[in-house]
Length: 454
Image (cartoon, rainbow, N blue to C red; front, top):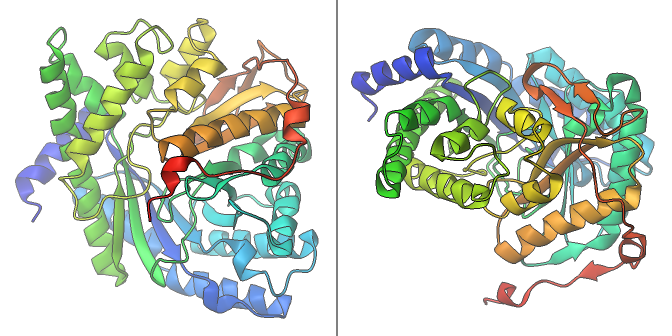
């Protein structure tokens, strides 16, 4: 059981080190909303979401007041919409209507985002999957709170290169559709390999088909707490460093466990998982990059960066896994460029490149995240970057993802302001050499040999 001493200790971390619960995410299955009639599907979706999530925001606010724990976001994830709309949707425009319904439901219940405008196509695409992917630019440009994700690869299935090619084109088209907002639509679109069913973080959250009808998942965040703890052991050896990270991760995760248990009890919905990822914000002192600097790097990107990030990620998992009855989601360290002031500083100093970020993704939680690139980047180049990142996930049996933002009208050296938790980002250069013939081959990259474990 969580006791009052732990509550008091976490309150000190909240006051002094930017500790917060990043999100309570209510996962909702929409499988029973499927119908051959599109209007009926939309009615079913709206009714189920607004009924189950009616008290989500109010419950989150109650817990914040009673325990003094900031809960930054209240969110919803739903069953991948390509599955829910498969019978009713006969063209991309039909899926856009479902996106509008999701947006309306999210606004009605007051959540920040709703995730699950998604398709799972790691081995192949159905007609509905392809319609949904082609609808993404329009869907993200006409909604405010809908987030989209597509899983194009897995260790068991390989990489669907037809989908990777289509996603390169889709990302660029989404940038065009939302160019008046500095291509902000791309910030709500993630391409995955090995996507988890229970991720509470946006934009990649969806409610997996193996999940219960409704579930409460919580994501915690404590980069500032870890950094402050490491300041107390500056210059100590790696054993002391690792122990400090591990103990701090335990304390941070206990906060998530407390909030998850309370939200579950008050809403009468089962507790799913705590995701113990270190998720940074643009706030000073709430940065994964600053942890790496405290470990001993002048800037992220310096030699030793990948080793330091591997150490951090592993110790966070070791400490956090003992603090919750169920740990899931992504659980590690995020390295989104625009959302981490230290990462932005490293890019602007010339220490951090796209290639070094890719190397870092081999050992962190997700992948190339919230990276602004020139608006004239080719669709095939975006597809090639996606394919590289998917290969890292497939071979290493881990989740990887890409959230690139080709900012229309901007080039290297420009800065893009996204606002809020999304922060701002310097436009980073991409390798200009062509991979078009590679991307255009079509078909599927086979699963690696170590996938055959049966």
